[in-house]
Image (cartoon, rainbow, N blue to C red; front, side, top):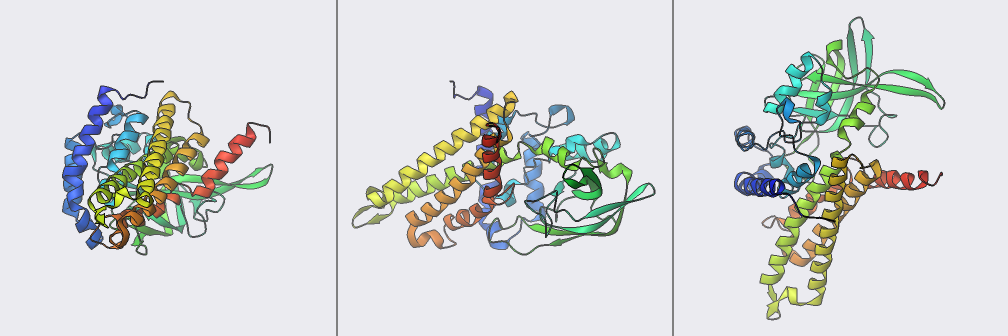
Amino acid sequence: MDFSLSDEHMMLVDTVRSFVRRELMPFEDEVERTGEVPPELATRIRDRAIAAGLYAANLPSDVGGGGLDFLGLALLERELGATSWALQTNVGRPSRILMACEGEQRERYLLPAARGEVTECFALTEPDSGSDAPRGIRTRAERDGADWVLNGRKHFISNADVADVAIVFAVTGEDEVERGLRKRITAFLLDKGTPGFEVSIGARAVGHHGYRHCELTFVDCRVSDSKVLGTEGRGIELANRWLHDGRVMVAANCVGRARRVVDLAAAWAADRKQFGKPIGSFQGVSFKLADMRTELEAAELLTLRTAWKLDLGEATDADCSMAKLYASEMLGRLTDNAVQVFGGMGVVESAPIERFWRDARIDRIWDGTSEIHRLVIARSMLRDRGA
């Protein structure tokens, strides 16, 4: 089995790694301290990402994107993962669900998104609906002539404060199925500034400072049929179709952060001296380093293998869940061990380790909790055996 990367993939890694070190990392401390990315900095990162050919790398070339394969995207996410979400999000990777745009929607949303002129947010989660979507969704869209009228609320919606358009999922009716009534979920494209649509900043989170989550409120918000993305009642199927690979990209991002954490821990263990010698020479530290490196390598191989299977069209839901589950939990364990290696310096703000430690916690929650992914994996195993 050949594990080597192509020349093109190696060039991509070098380009992204250099971009991250030059354009993103120098601003980490400022963003962490202030809790925001200044608009002028966000614009500069976006413009330089466009110039470097990195913007919208996840979209096909025929709509103006970079056209990377899934393995290339995983490598890009791995390199971007070395820095904070607040900065790397400006190297835009528009939601692939926008590929469902048709007709005027392509000119209004998809093509401008690929050019960096329009940004979007993905609005599915609600106060009473997270892991149980779509069953728990309460936001409703009622037909009124040629329009739809939305009422409801979304929360934990990342990046909504700077997005131009929200991809909003709402109940548009019920269908009778064998197990009773099933909600019909429809996706809508809602422009910022639409009457009845309000965005507010959510509570400050412990991690990913500068990358805000928001509350979205809809009060008699009227939108036309032209804002329906895809087919009425097929929103969840649409999301699953285009977002299937997102879990693998989260895994790759976790791997990127873990690589940086391991490098920092190893450098500290080599330089920091106690009892007259480097702390890395003591078994209590050296064994931690060995375990950290081993877990990192395992997570990276699993993640890149799953991306390779995506390119072959062979990756299952369980494959993607395994990559996301293992990589996110690996990052949690590694950052905790890194804090232990750094000792007291691991929990002070002047060192970056405490930031990675805090930031790592959310990866076991967003894009599906660890528990949900374990359910997906286990059900796949049992289903294959007729259970």
